Image: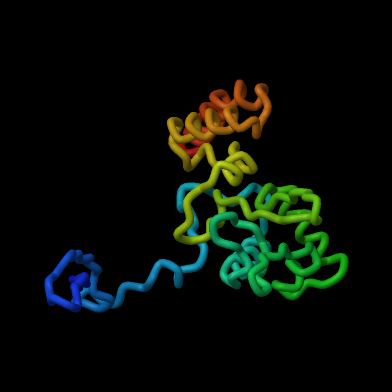
Length: 201
């Protein structure tokens, strides 16, 4: 254990005005080296299977994308930093990350969207692509309301029911989703979890 101690001292009198301390785990101890969380790439959930029909090659390509720092933390958007701006990757650029060009790049992205591993969102500045956090989630981030709303059916396997209800309540207050979606939310939770229980039985 490492303790960081800070003191606020009046230089004129030498009096300690305030004192604080923080504790950190040793980076290295008898159990080995603790890898910093930001070095671990995308988080994956062992109890969430990849979509039916997604090939091992496609899983490999998505793994390469999420380990290439192309996924922006806090949003799961595929993009890159340019100065102080964050710019989204195009479908062509996403394909290039895994060695695909032209129609093959666009076809790969289109298929990932069809399998709901990615989702395309149209904005005033152009298309943006988001990775489904049920399969790959930028490490260390909290699940935001906007990201939850994009992928709420898939996240029913991961997020507790009470969290879903809080998110949907927030969405209702902010007018971010329709009343019909709110009414269907509970049935989505139970339907997906019952399917999962039947699959495991």
